[in-house]
Structure formats: C-alpha cells, structure tokens
Image (cartoon, rainbow, N blue to C red; front, top):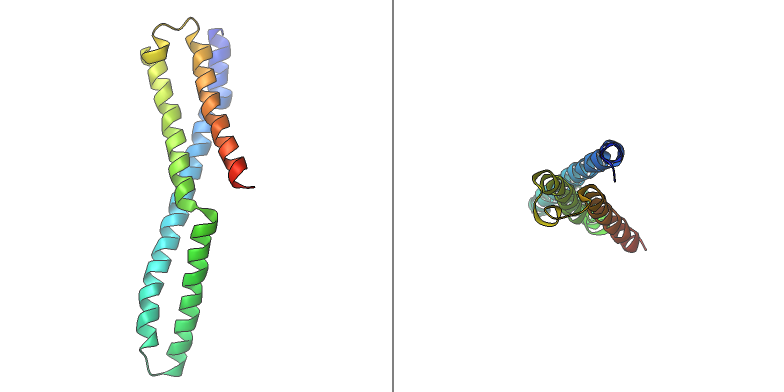
Length: 138
C-alpha cells in the first residue's frame, strides 16, 4: 500500500471510526451513570415514602418504584455499561495500534508492508465489533 492511499485511509476511515467509537462510549457512559443514579436514589426514596402515613406519599412511593423498575429494565435490556466498555476498549485499541505503527513496534518492526498490516488490523477490530453487535441484536 502506498503512503498516499494510507493517508487517505487514515483520513476517510480510521479517524472517523475513532471519533464514532469515542462518541458512542461517552453516550453510553452518560446514560448508564444517569440511570444508575436515578435507580439508586429512587430506591432509597421509595423506602422512605412507604413509611409515611399520608396516602399521597404512598402514591409517590408507587410512582417512584415504577420508575425504579423501568430504569432497571432499561439498564438490563440496552446494556449501556457493556456498550460503554466495549466502545471505549475498541477506541483505545485503535489509538494504540496507530502508536505501534508510528513507533514500528511489534508486528510493524519487520513488516514488508506496515501500512497494509495496519489497515488489516484496524479493519479486523472494526468488523469484529460489527459482528458482535449483529449477534447481540438477534
């Protein structure tokens, strides 16, 4: 692979993929932490409301426990924590691979075509994630 094609690959595909994985990791982290916080706080609030004598506070406890159930279900169903960790891992692995390439470390040290090797490794990582997502959605 010639240097121009490699630079074009980095610009058109590699850096865009890093941005995409980074954005998805941040989104899933924020949703996960937000839902976890709501579930934790409302779980405690529900217990306190159940001890109340007033009828309207008991209704708030029912609403609160319903929100806890929905939040817990969303966390379980959509696997925000798992996605956050997966996307962050892929993003950082892609970044690390570029450092290995730049420093001519490991497989790149003696590679006949380090650019082609880099592209293959990056695409293997991306396609492995696409297969995993496809398998999980079935």
